[in-house]
Amino acid sequence: MTTFLKTYPSPHDSRALRFSIKDLFDVAGEITTAGSKVLRDAAPATQDATAVARLKAAGAVAVGRTNMSEFAFSGVGFNPHYGTPINPTARLREPHSARVCGGSSSGAAASVASDAADIGLGSDTGGSLRIPAALCGLVGFKSTARLVPTDGALPLSTTLDTVGAITKDVTVAVQAHEILANRTILLSNKPLHAYRVAVIKNVFADSLDQTVDLAWKRSLQALAEAGLSITAIELPELTEIPSINATGGFSPIESYRWHKDLLAAHQADYDPRVAQRILLGSKATETDYQRLQQMRTDWIERVSSRLQNFDAVLSPTVPIVAPTIASIEADDTEFFRVNTLLLRNPSIVNLLDGCAISIPCQKRNELPVGLMIWHAAMHDDTVLNLALSCEKLLSP
Image 1 (cartoon, helix red, strand yellow):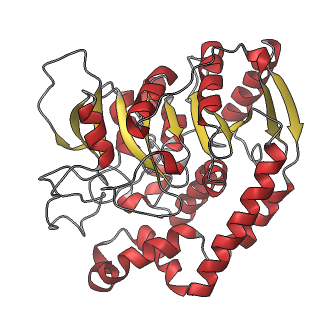
Image 2 (cartoon, one colour; image 1 turned 180 degrees about the vertical axis):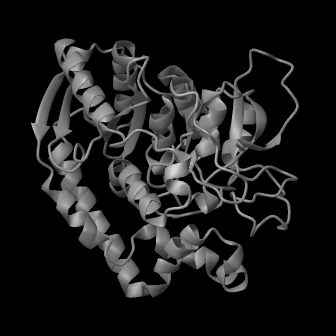
């Protein structure tokens, strides 16, 4: 199991927040490999990524660079080049099995779950902070994308990429976001009964495994009994997502533009499952891309309007608990089935240009399950405030 690709000296100040760095962020003097063999001989970065620089300037101490899905293109967290991090939280429940952390910020989650870091600096294009947080029993916050600069982070999708953090609790998530976004969260201390939330009837709660289904229903009941106003609604716009992404979606199209020359020269060195998905973008025309942008803009407007009377939306973060590494390692069909399931719910928020947080909601003896609290763009403060209240009730 490989979590850290590079470790740094232990901090002298034990009070400082420790942060790990996903290997797609530049660190001055080091090579950013993004979990790939293709970039291992690239030139070292000349300066820190903005996110890294802001954490250091705030007094946080870097403890190492963490492994990830190659080029951030997977919700599973599997890496054939440097090893797949084992889920530390699931390992405590099942000492003899090895389960994935989820991706693509797999090592970031493993570093926090194993108490090697307080903050796992990562990115989220379709759930890459929230998926590992849910599978490892942690907190993952994806802010509205525009709030945190992506400078110095290797891109997957310039439209969807979001920089953020995985933490052990919501309080540290708030601290991390304030540093990364250079803004102050307005803490309201509102009680649960002051919020009105929606639960989407279609898609989000489909195909839940038994552990997730029980935790999801138990959480809704506990929150309702504590006074939270919960309304079940339909979101018919979800049926449009396949047609919006008919030409592959943003990630393949935009990543292919970045990888085109590298693939031509070094495709054999890529993880075949990653190369396969990037190459989907080669088929899209500029007209396809512009149409995709227009369809998304229209879709965001209609979905945001439908949610405007609610403070937030609740859903399961992902519909399954962490699968075993063995189950996805050698079976492409199972890998892509699991990858699709893990990305399904969180990626909807990225398409919406929204904000979302995953908090743990399992019981102490259960495998980790995440509750996702989310909304459209720029509802970050409300989502975080509600998460603080929900965490007090649901934390295992």
